[in-house]
Image (tube, rainbow, N blue to C red):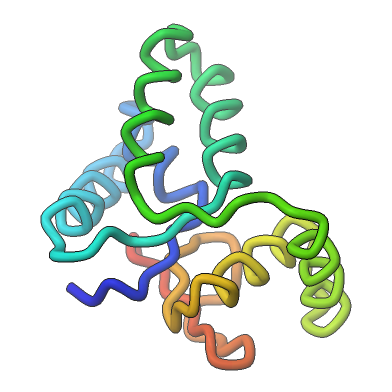
Length: 137
């Protein structure tokens, strides 16, 4: 498993949403692969924040949601900065995506990844050297 994978929020959420059916099973299997990899994958503080909010919306107890965030924070994490925000706006403008997706692209680019696991962006699309893969489909 290559180490240059950036993981978007939705993949983490499906792994913790037991009501998501096949997507839950697929997300769990794919994340197990990443946990066993020689190098940790990438995510961002934004991903951790969105993940926490979504777990709380699913009714996950606060302590369990906090623990899950702490677990994923062991991966390689891109911090939120003003510069990242500015680059996210540029990505949004360049690719005509939402601001939040622009931030994800900016974080993946800062990480130097070539693969972005996401269900939100267009699978197979290349965003200037970052290819989107839907690991659930």
